[in-house]
Amino acid sequence: KNEVEQSPQNLTAQEGEFITINCSYSVGISALHWLQQHPGGGIVSLFMLSSGKKKHGRLIATINIQEKHSSLHITASHPRDSAVYICAARGSQGNLIFGKGTKLSVKP
Amino acid sequence: GAGVSQSPRYKVTKRGQDVALRCDPISGHVSLYWYRQALGQGPEFLTYFNYEAQQDKSGLPNDRFSAERPEGSISTLTIQRTEQRDSAMYRCASSLAGRAETQYFGPGTRLLVL
Image 1: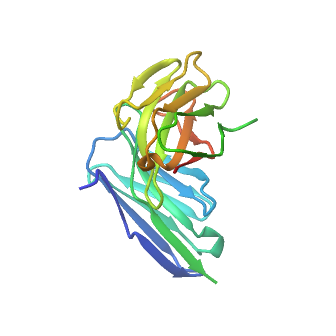
Image 2: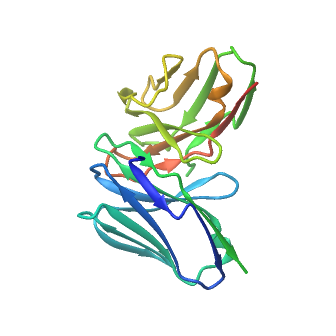
């Protein structure tokens, strides 16, 4: 079993839909990251959070430390949101333990 | 302000050759991380440095892999006697001051071992 599990692995949505990507982890963490990997391969950090909720534009990330679970929400999805979204748990040494990613495709 | 840069962006080599991959972190960033990402997979931690000190190398797959950061800035990941299974995207990231900071990723080096 991976230390960081994401679901779903693949997600197809229609433009405008509300999207949720889930992440569960089994290790103790100091923080959790959500990353976006574009089709060209570049990785962008979206959020780093250790408690509660963060919002940036149409993106919302939440974390429940007790349940070891985090969610990434996208409101009013758009085709340009199509990418791989990766959850990564920051371990005690500062290294990141990555999930396998969720491939999102938003159709117009 | 420049981000994290890596070179070369692409490297094709023959099995058995040594390769050196370079990472130039954001100026002033204390921590530097190396990751490997196989096609279709998420990144996998290899090693990381605070300044010039290698803090954790538990992710290096075997002793053919080594990394250094002699002056606490640029880092080199070296793979000796490359094998086909070493083919992957090798990514570097840096952060301002270690654990609590966001990591900024470089564009990666795509390594192909023939």
